[in-house]
Image (cartoon, rainbow, N blue to C red; front, top):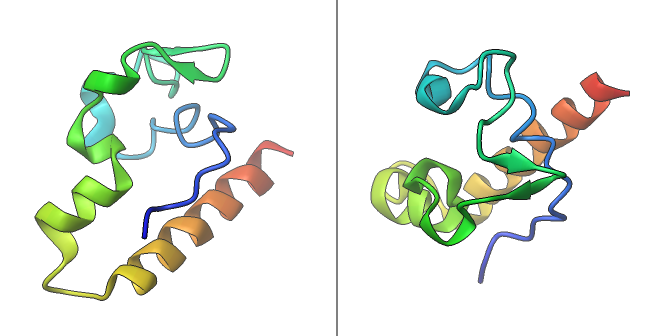
Length: 84
């Protein structure tokens, strides 16, 4: 099972509110590696940008994978609603 992402770039356009992604912020809340909704370093992106790897490293003890995916999808929906 893998996280299903629609590659809209919304999460990458809204990193300014999270101190975890501060090093990726180009100064306006958008990831400095985002170009036309695509990640310029996709194959080498940080583990925090990799939903499945992040779960395997940090969250597997605290929740099930389905719950983790559900929470990620909820945040995705909220970010999309904020951009409307």
